[in-house]
Length: 165
Length: 165
Image (cartoon, rainbow over all chains, first blue to last red; front, side, top):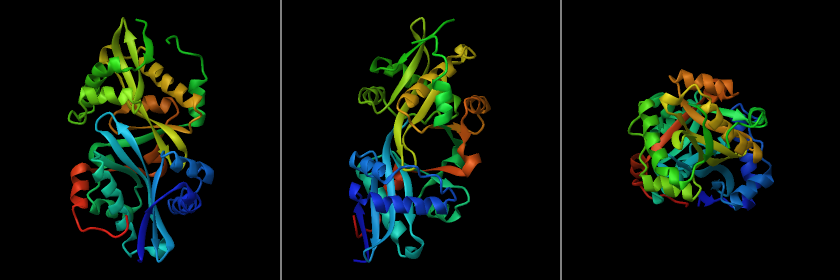
């Protein structure tokens, strides 16, 4: 069949790694992905990371990568880290197929939500997500994503021990 | 007044759960927290949530709750869900001390980042986070937080059946 979607196993680590880098280049953040192929395979084997791969006429066409987290407000939810269709395979329903498979998994587990990040200039992706009923939570409630990298963590954690504990 | 900080246990679940409501009120999102006290306790027992509480004379005056996520770019990370100090006990270093415990956990596991969200109008919190070396990822890269909630998931899945998975 033309479109086939399968669950990723650790054997797909190389294909996943390739697509991760293609997507990061598109996002203008090519230095973003830092994990090795081995780390990706291990994460899938340990179920820290889950994936779906899409093939069109047996050619690798796209993927979706996600994990599960637990929020103090709503409990278990799915974080969709990546969803990507290679340029040559667009406009053939691959993206929608992947999204449907993701939504089905979330629905079967009765999850409170699917959450994802999108770049504010990526208007095609924003339209795509809104078409499926996703809400821009940054705009809706004002949430901003903050991060502290390892170097800053080290500065803080390696400083004088606190008086407590 | 001196305080101590200890890891959060299931014994603290009831108080922490009610304090998440105090925090949600402050955030002008009082309908946000939807978990029952027992769901909260179970989440701590099963280590889906972990954190620390600050005590003054055995009363909980502040807390931080976190969980682990897995990033396709940087691997295991800590998501800091809630950091809260009751108004009467602010400006005494409790917030920073709670943050330090989270940083120590991340440092000991050599994690590449700690991540959280903050409301764009909460300038006190934003100033605090910037003082500890955090970066606003929307300012840096343009990331927006998108969410698809359970009713929209159900509505989407209720459509035509799909080939593939």
